[in-house]
Amino acid sequence: MNLSMFLSKDQEEAEKLLDAYDYNMRIAAGHILKGEFKKASIYHQNMAHELEQLNALKANKKTIDQAWLQLKQIDGEQQQKEFLDRLSK
Image (cartoon, rainbow, N blue to C red; front, top):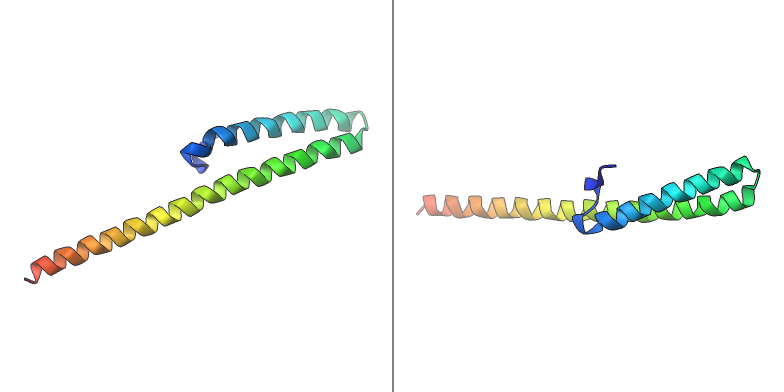
């Protein structure tokens, strides 16, 4: 999986969460095949929790990326204003 949807600092954690999700999915599938639905549901709850954590990490990157874009836009506008001020003198 492409981990670029997460901040660099969060990619290791995201990879661990994805591995845990995969593990829980395989164990849950085994319990389902045996008709052990209660046990399977516990692993599915774990999977849901891991997905929530992954979503939070992804949302964190989106927020940081949006803030970075806004800062770059403000910087560009400031540079343009300074350039136009110099031209008008």
